[in-house]
Image 1 (spheres, rainbow, N blue to C red):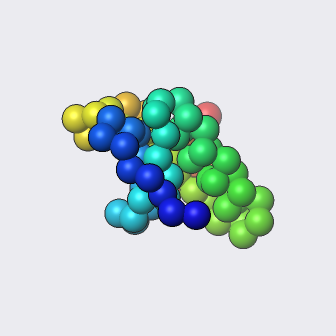
Image 2: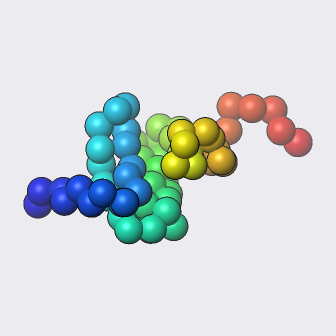
Amino acid sequence: PALKQEANAWKLTRNGDVVAYDDTQAGVVATGVRLCRKRWVEQGITAELQIRRRDGTIRDTRTYGRDPRGIK
């Protein structure tokens, strides 16, 4: 199915390519979380989700799989 881009839609990208659109940031984050978890479970590849504001600044970063940082 083709993706329909809306003027005010939030978008999910991977390596610069649009993967999905949603009317809400929560919806696109939920899709991103699902895809990151799927990648870890099916392929064993650590995935990182960066949640950005409309101005492009990073609001939050989430890692799925083995977190490479040494956080205790």
